[in-house]
Length: 435
Image 1 (cartoon, one colour):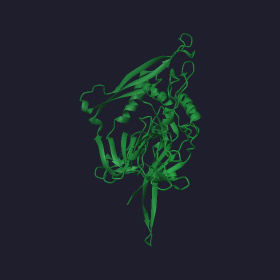
Image 2 (spheres, rainbow, N blue to C red):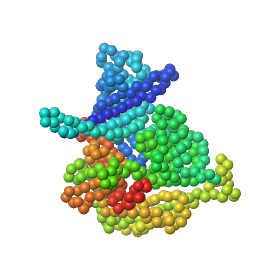
Image 3 (cartoon, one colour):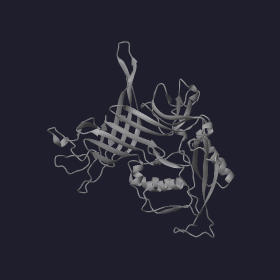
Image 4 (tube, helix red, strand yellow):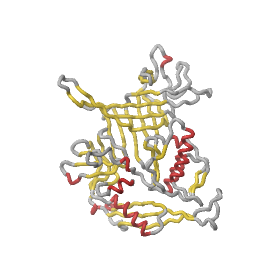
């Protein structure tokens, strides 16, 4: 029998009270339960989000292992209670609020189960938990229970303003330069939670791009996404990722077997797939095409007009072409994509690049999503193995686009896994280089 394990950690972040004094909020609390949680995680969104529902009038545990009342205290020593979760104005409470907007939250979940029955009848248990979410409290709802709304580290970028700066012109700049400036700006403010770039960073020119002094760091990234819709920015832990790929090679497997083959989580229709919204299509079932764009910037240092920073003003040139099937025909059997690239100077090169991308989506296999238990744990960017004992010809490996994690007292832990494309026919060098 599987027993659900929930571990929620709240790290208070010091702030000022109503008098302007530092309130001394520097405690860590551990909450080993909740009524429910709901977490969305995908590279398609700037932020992973979480909502945790916790009952009021309960005890939590501090870093010393002591129990602390959270909610309306009914004990005689009312000064030890936390009547108010997010404010200071209560004469009955001597402590600052237990949780406030801006506090750091980590959600871990998993199972405990019997791993061995000993000869004397005693039992050995194995516990496996994984970190589902790390981030900050963005809002609190106080009703019959408490609902804690959270965002991942992108929350820091939404609170951090950028200085005015122009990239490009007579100096070659790429996305890593913008991300370095964002990292420097954010880390100067949030000294206790430093962010960093992934070691596997990919260069991509940003052309003539400017940040405004009233823009937040998150708005800058969102503006880059609008210029280049095929790129993504997201956090994996404290690492800010972004650039020419969204699927990093370090994420694709959970390890390797003795022969050096990658180990992928396995999901089987007859065993651990609870429900599914999957369709299996043959390549011949779908006509597929794509429009491909390359956004290129060019300037003449001698004759180009100067921007307000004194650098030559770049001219944006957009190269475009089409690949695959161009006739939509039957709308039910046609898929059309749009791919964006940068600094590809010839139509032939753009067509070849676009066809390579299109081939990822034209395959014999499943499309859609399915629901499973809390284990094996999956994150977007993982490759998973789907098997079918009745129709083994449908077995295959798939890239995970996003995961919706849920828990409730009624249904327990669930993962809803969204597939992106099949990876069986993608060569190892391409997977190892990032996609």
